[in-house]
Amino acid sequence: FGAYLPKNGSESLPLFSDSVLHLAAEIDGLTRMTRIAFSLKQLVADVIPRIGLQEAAKTKPVVILPGVDNSQFAGNGVFIEGDIKPEISDYSAHVMIGEAVSSFIYAQLFENQTAVLVSSIKSAQVLVEPFWKATAIERFSWCVSTQETLVNMLNNTQYLRTTQSTVNSVVAFSTSNVDVT
Image 1: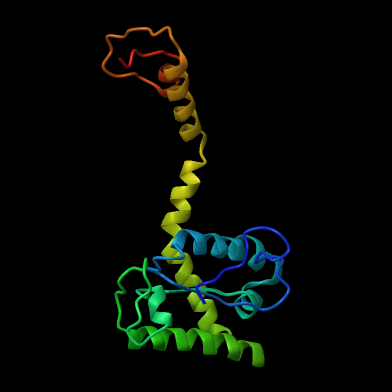
Image 2 (image 1 turned 120 degrees about the vertical axis):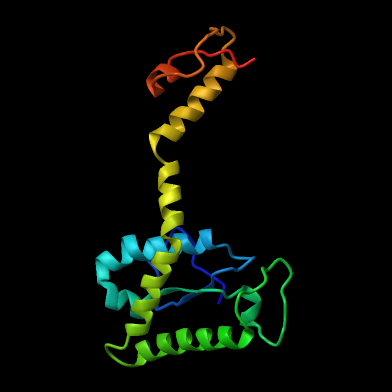
């Protein structure tokens, strides 16, 4: 637990041939949610469309336990350096860990026993959706355009002074050289 498959290659989640449970703590101070969100995105974007939600839940579920930290997998009050203080008790964390693990094992042994794992995948999606949206925004051209404009301004030795306190459009801004000194 607290481990994950590589992002790329033959051992990445979409290509991994064996059943595997990604079981993560929401507030893990060691394996950040941004890394688990990547595995969940692979599940949602690559695995589920190919094999369906039920089979994906059975063979490659990504489960995030809310309020749990990494240290709670060890139990008995053990605190791993670099971790974050948990939001729930060790007992509650152990119940959640046990439910996720037993649901995964049960799904391996019996047909059509993925309801808990399907629900866990959907809950994980809700949890990381804001992160996915934020990273998608970063990929839009406006971010790249703004960065390029700032770099060009800093590299350009000929500045045009402006008396305007605002620029009416992004296009006007991107083609102007406002004196930043």
